[in-house]
Length: 101
Image (tube, helix red, strand yellow):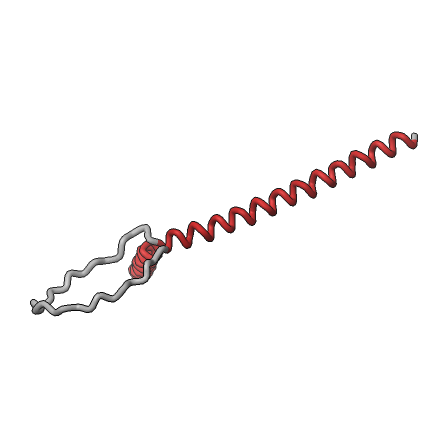
C-alpha cells in the first residue's frame, strides 16, 4: 500500500514539474527547447525578396500601456476630485450645523 502511494505521489510531482516548466516557457521565463535538425545540403536558389511587415510588438505594448496609464490617471484624478468635493460638502454641513446652535 505504501509503495502505491509513493508511486502516485512521484507521478503527481512529475506532472506538476512538467506543468510548471511549460508555464514558465509560455510566460517567456525559460526559452523553448531548441532541437538541432540535420539538413541535407541544398543548392543555392535565388529567392524573391518579399518585403516583411515590420513587426513592433514592443511599441504596440507601449502604446497600450500608455493608453491604460492615461485612463487610470484620469480615473484617479476624477475620484480625487469627487472625494474632495464630498469632503468640502461635509465641511460645509458641519459649519452650517454649528451656526444653527
